[in-house]
Image 1 (spheres, one colour):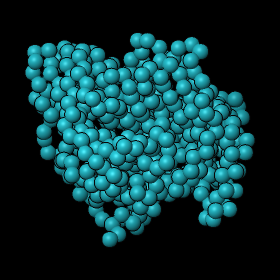
Image 2 (image 1 turned 135 degrees about the horizontal axis):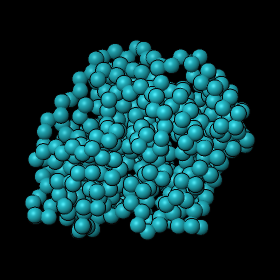
Image 3 (image 1 turned 45 degrees about the horizontal axis):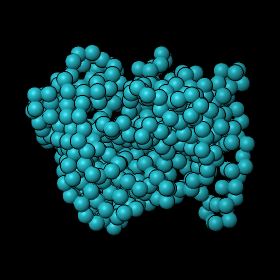
Length: 466
């Protein structure tokens, strides 16, 4: 690839402010006070999950990396550079260019890349048919490198802010990018929504997957479809309402100029902390019951159901195999299996897997070994993705990709971008799906996708209500 516009960078993190912040309402008031005319990324954790502690707001970027196929764009305050290169390599090179880090006393994050990886980056990792129509034309990789980060610690009830300065090898300061981003004004009216496929289309695709399973091609395939809505007038408002209604550990809001991402994910893809990796795939879903007794019956059925157990176990094996490409031999263990997690509209099963990263493994190595997340592809992974390409007519984009942060210090945290929508032009696009196995019932699988999208659809359809 072409050289970056800098040979080396030095990073200085300084504490800017620290104050008390009691609850999520105060945090969202803080988010509203930030400059909405610039690209921003908000990562919010809520609910009762042990990991739902830190929330992050990343603003005032001094670098923005976008990519589409092998065309990469790196934007600074001075100019925009274009590269014909693998975006994973460009991302790596930016991180490798940081030769000195002076940390603040604030724990958890000391600067880095915050943004998203779209599902279609799979096409740069594996040889796949790539038959889905790209009707969005959006970046497949979007990361901003912020000069200001707010960190809300729900446990300590504090808001801490750090400022980040970057100097190149000449001692020149990389200034934050400053340019107006037009606020998207969307048409009103949320009375109808539609599907990119009909119920019959989705059920027919499930039957085709079962044929592939019967023939021995694959054990499981994660099939998805789109729900389409009119564009959102105030996407941040919708996202905040979703959080208040159904908080989860891996919420994300990204304002990327010409599009916004709203993610309400409960699922972690990968976390790296001092060389230890964790992944927590989700498989197995039941709707919440209308009464306490009905709810308990549904949860019990999820816990004892052989189909759901087999589905989760297959993905656990797949993720262990992916981690085996980058972790020390013998270090991979299943810490917890078949944990039940309950949310506003659904119960889920999940498992926690741990491994120790080998020395010398880069972010590009990690992503090429594990992306896309196995819980949203199927097993075996490559054959499942080939079948997905055959049956899904449009790109998924960030849905079933990943959102999160990659730190300059080697620590990182990425979600699985489920329960995720993108607003672009005059459309709001929500992906929904589920894992298909041999004994899947097409009508029930279709209904499960609707349960998973229920939180989104209920709020979007009344988004303009007073």
